[in-house]
Length: 484
Picture 1 (cartoon, rainbow, N blue to C red):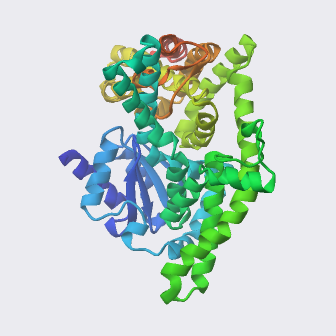
Picture 2 (picture 1 turned 90 degrees about the vertical axis):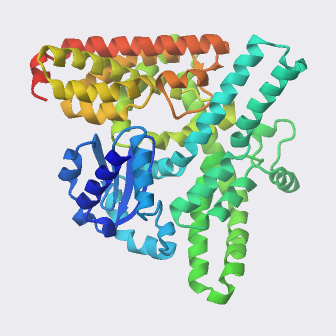
Picture 3 (picture 1 turned 135 degrees about the vertical axis):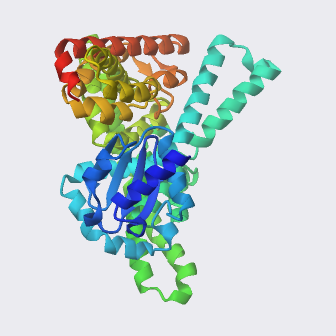
């Protein structure tokens, strides 16, 4: 880990020193850093540091430093070993004070657009959940494949046990996903995490159905159409409800004597929050969730093939800019809603084609760089291309296509053809997170059998590779590669 230690030491200097860094954590490819004084950060120095593939900075005190898959976790581990906490709360900083001290900074970050800020906030809630989502999704996909290949699995001791083990892992996420989301939302909004987890878990409990029956809001003939029922609103209800809960908790804590805080504050917070949450937030977000699923279905599952083809092309072609801006994680709320409603995700397989288009574009650039003897860009592609095939596109985005400009566009245009094919075939995914080749076991749902869904997904990847390669090869000239 010597290289990561050197990189972290260099980054700490460019971030204004270790004392200016309040927290550091990571996602699949980024080191996520919160600083005290954003004015001390040397952005250009960070961008030009060896080992850094890119920088995303949408708030004065929050930075996402792209270092690549694997390395981001190692850098975060180095930071932890140096005593840098993963969150402000771990540093012993009062959550209340944290919110007050950063109020101006957060507002400054929101000036770029409240919608973008909200999407990034949702992404930050779900990012730590992605490893579990992926594990559960793969188990679900393998279970589906097993059931189709061996219909009598339930009567077989070995295969029946295997299927139930896979189902157990998958259910551990799906049954309690609202609880995990609530816990993380409370951390993100500055509340007590366990209270957020409790509110999220309440969402799926049968007592909600009992309450709904008592007040006449339950539809016994069609339970899924009930105004209020267990699970109504899903993760959208949880995120909004936990945000409200955090406001209530802070208001109570400001007025609560210290001696009574540990007992009275959490109790009053939950009691005050639960009533509007159950009777207002859950029904309203239930209608919103239903509308979101309906809108996506009108494109992804439209009976008219041309609609699916056009929708798939546009979605894939425009997805890379979302990734570059760090906004793609904001879509996880939509994925979660679909997963809860349908049992699978329809949009994600199409969006996964964007990374494949970029792989094709990178190969085209690599061959042109070989002709013009540009060893630097070839070296960058050598390091980033394996991750690209495995579905981690950010190293290629920030190291190759985005800095060059034109290939960033041609990659998306090429990916659109694969996206059009995948959406035309109506492929469904059991989870989201990885894309590329490692996502194959996830692609077992939709209008086809599990086996054919995976085959169609692979065909879509190949189409995107070829599309990104051809379009980039046409529009990017060798002389444009020589000088980068």
